[in-house]
Length: 235
Image 1 (tube, rainbow, N blue to C red):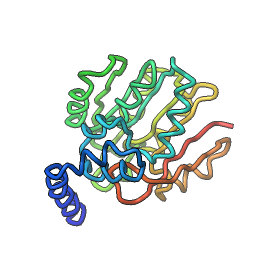
Image 2: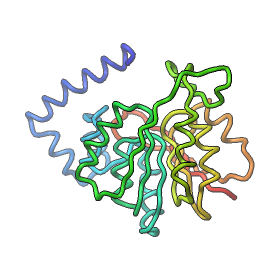
Image 3: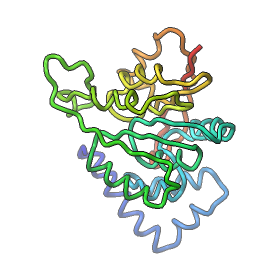
Image 4: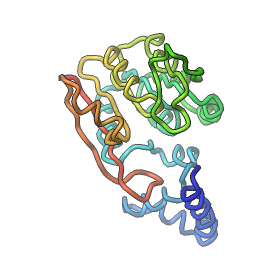
């Protein structure tokens, strides 16, 4: 964690203790105001359990609303997710089956703990990357991960097998994961691509033919700035 980010997180945790003592945290959480509820989430930075308790995924609010509407019309939906976390449990409440793959095996164990009280319709796949070689074709652009091969992680969707009504791309090697997702997307299905406007994603996705992309920018739980989540359909 960078120095600036670390200082921000530490500051938020300190403020949270004060907000709990004064009862402000509860007032914000129980408020009917979306703005107040968003302020409440700012006290939950890097607290996935808190996100789960508030029934939120870590996407933009407009994207959460659109996905909620999409799944409400498909109670038997099958979902595949790249990148496990609070969204895994959020999806589990709205779908018949969720398969989620996570590259960080330590974090995967934490998510398993959060899933203890879930409906039992989630299968979590922990697939760690391997050391990259000259033959590696699936890399991540994230700093600190560029020397790793995410081939097994990305191909987990092949082993599970579709079709899937909804596929979430929110982990590592997102462009490769997205390309693989299209082979398993059901007719009328949608891909949720988080942080799609990051240059290393957008420069590739925006020029791919045969796609309809809906950009949903807005406030995002735990963050003091907006982000953009993309919903992608095949034409």
